[in-house]
Image (cartoon, rainbow, N blue to C red):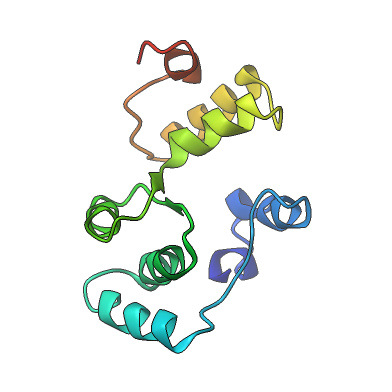
Length: 128
């Protein structure tokens, strides 16, 4: 949310995705979520700690490309996805076509994102 509020142009579509129901915005509510967040935030960023705490306590999937956060989520038995998984799901669910998703991926790579593939077609075809 800080990125959106600071007008990061790369995050401009997040509010639209929330309105469409594709992303859900939530906060820490229960005492257990807050306690787990406090523990996790000692070694992880605040966003990663909050995301994992919510996923653990609500049985949700955690999305991150951060290696340390993914390792912690795995240790806690949280189902995972990452940026490529989100893009693949968007294509499979008709949110965008593969050409548009490849365009998003290219922009991300150009901005410094590390991707093991250059095209989502490698993933969609099952041959990464």
